[in-house]
Amino acid sequence: MDKLIIEGGRPLKGEVRISGSKNATLPVLAATLLTDETCVIANVPKLMDTNTMVRLLKSLGKVVDWDKDKLIIMSNGKMNPVADYKLVSTMRGSICVLGPLLAKLGEAKVSMPGGCVIGVRPVDLHQKGVEALGAKVAFDGGYIVAQAKRLKGARVYLAGASGPSVLGTANVMMAATLADGETIIECAACEPEVEELANFLNAMGARIRGQGSPRIIIHGVKKLHGADYRMSSDRIEAGTFVLLAAMARSNFVIRDIDYSQLTALDDVMHNVGVTVQAEKNLVKVKSPKVLKPFSITTYPYPGFPTDLQAQYIALMSLTNGVSVIRDTVFPDRFMHIAELNRMGARIRREGGSAIVEGVKSLCGAPVVASDLRASAALVMAGLVASGKTEIRRVYHLDRGYENIDRKLTGLGASIKREKE
Image 1 (cartoon, rainbow, N blue to C red):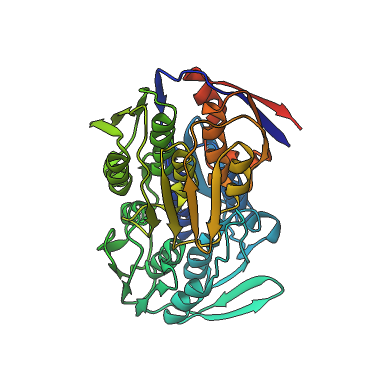
Image 2 (cartoon, helix red, strand yellow):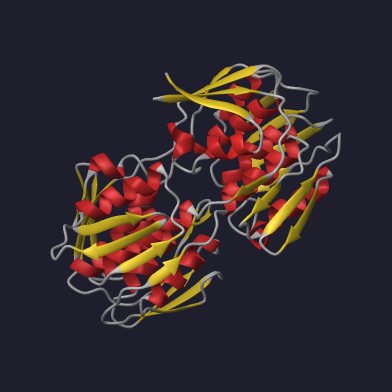
């Protein structure tokens, strides 16, 4: 197991390139199960999660080859409907194989998923969606078992207690591509990752419209073919670097970023006094000496992303005042508070909110990463803190940020990786 050691206080400058989107890549890779033909996916980030999905695809009967940043995915002739616990339990995104397996094979046995410990993430909407299409679903020994001789189009309402489900929308949309008739997903997730999956499916011959809106309409087809596709950049990694630039008072250039996907973040940056200059596929960040406190609430897209909540708390820890950060998507996603407090922050939790009293500076300390985005927040804090910060359990970080230590070193940070 690796750890990161950061000597804080180094000025950051230069350029950093944003990698392909992890959260979009995982369901796109799952969608290749819907065809026997070859698919080529470019701009795939080399992450622990993408490697896990590749291993899962191989276990289900695919042949997968890496060629630099491209994945070439071919059929092995016979598919396996069982997604094993050892792979699925490590990553939430692996639940996305449920819909494609059910549509292609008429059956699927998928282990209950795992991933970051950020609160309860039920699979009820996945069950509701495929049952609406005619599948019978049961739970057996920690597995979701679904069967259907032939899926049929239906109207599906996918709102949950915390809003629409991104992966639930993805699963129903993929299953519906090969169903008989028309499927309408009401209260569908509007995230760019859902829109990208729909675009990839359409490139395979699916008939989907309305992606990016709360109503997605899918006309089932008999067969999907292979496709070549290039993944867009990772909006969460991009947002993390924007927040880092603001926190470090740095003006490094962020390239390969689609800033139009971060309108909520841009509004928040304006309110804290940070100027973000966007030019085509790059941005420059200009941060004042004193940041303004600003309270936010996370919402499903296009609201402020829950996946940037921890990083935003790190930023607010250095303001001159008090801010309240409320997470409506994952109300228990605050395990990073205790670790930031070890570095001198003043943060307390009240229910689903964090109350942040800004301090003048942070100091390095030994800390433990609890989940993927909390890891990023601790790295940000370590880079601006005085002294040395040692972050353990950084395998979480490697799940979602490609070569993060190399990218930061390229900006001038003092950061090295060691074995624990």
